[in-house]
Image (cartoon, rainbow, N blue to C red; front, side):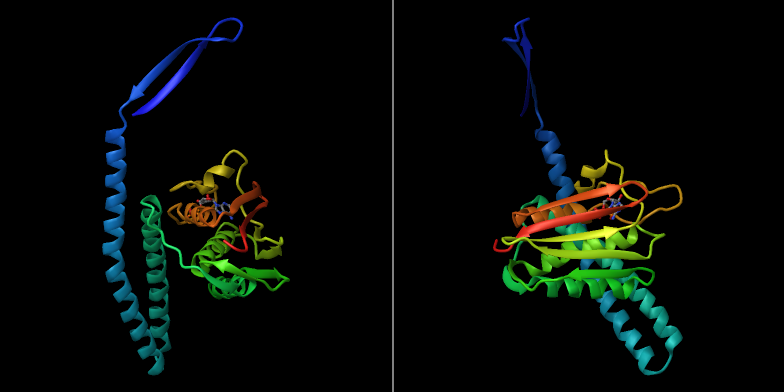
Length: 257
Ligand code: ADP
């Protein structure tokens, strides 16, 4: 049951009565569970064929390359990219169902923080032809945490910075050593976010519909997943933004979780 109570005060502000409502939310919870179960099963079932599709497409692409047929190799390369996009969307859906059912698992290891960030930059730069990603990574520090999951957060912020700044050609990423924490900031010169929508962007399936000239693809899950990962590590994630000028997404996490 969801219990809501509203106090009724006298003229001195003393509470003289409570008005209460009792709402049965069992049905609503059941529907939410069914939705989560469906998402889990559907994304799991989609993942298997997409994984084989990727494997076949890679084989065919390298066959074309080896035989010198670069026109078809290029076509297969494009196909591979779309399969990657599909597979990222499915992974996001799977992550969300894991988060919502408390089944997201973490494998902790010790790793060099800036080395991990550099790897992400290289990856994102490889597919971002228009933007130059400027790294400002000045320290060397090992931290303990789930490397892949933290990689995922940095990748999300960096790919968003590129995606939501279609008219810009640079993105700046820097890392800070704050002693017992490390911080990452990703700055873009893109469309920005209006102040009243700023905090909503970390909600599940939340998307801003774009501006007059642009529409952006996506499911509205990347920042939700990122914020859940950061929270699980005892960290914080936030955004500073000016509409029409750009955004800076930051997160900080303890060095030793
Ligand atoms: P998606 O990009 O798939 O929509 P996200 O969870 O990554 O999902 O982002 C949620 C929303 O937050 C986006 O739809 C977009 O409106 C806004 N957003 C995220 N990153 C940026 C950014 N760098 N600049 C402007 N808006 C952003």
